[in-house]
Image (cartoon, rainbow, N blue to C red; front, top):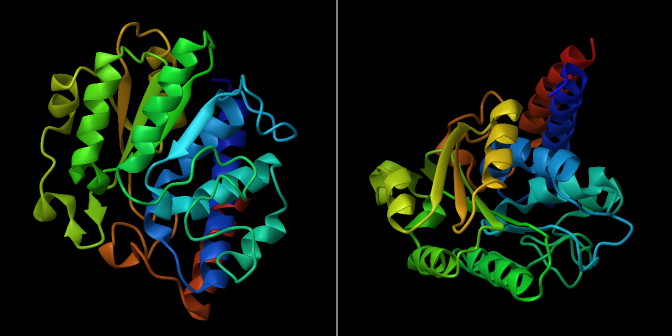
Length: 280
């Protein structure tokens, strides 16, 4: 990856985080922690990797993305708006009555959203269906999905994993945003996902583990996934919940609450300073 390209991705990810905080603050509710941890992966997919066109969001040949952990849609909305699917003004009225952007992704009302999601485990199932449809119709599009680590406690995730491997869905790449925290505490304490890599491997996946905030590692993993034949790939991305906002980082309490006015100002100032440093 060229240095200029890497720098631009970092700037874009910072802007995704800025608009994520903007949306959650104005909504007075939402899920900032897991949105911020996913920002770099979303940035890479929408601004570097995926074959998508904001002017033709229903293009049958486009790549697909499903945010299975749908509650973290503030970051998805930020990425879509910055990519040109709709105005960033929509983010300022997130979750407001009559507004386009809801608390979970709505494919019927939001350009660029390929699947409505929110009930954990269901998004990955839909992504498997999309991948199989691509195979059956002879299309060469790829399907990307993002799971939360806590979401992997859902049995439906593993039913989907069996389906994906059985049908040899090598056009499916699944990211696990592994930030180690979920609404009730640490993932390790709630149910335990030790050796998640071996679990997915046992279910027939190619497994890649990366730092989910390192764009070069993200790129290498995505490129490797495209070379895998006969089975799906999972990229387990180690991330920091609340990444980019000091007081939110690795704090379970920021799973599902909005910052107050003072916290909002602190978060925005920190992120603007990060952006300023990148632009220096």
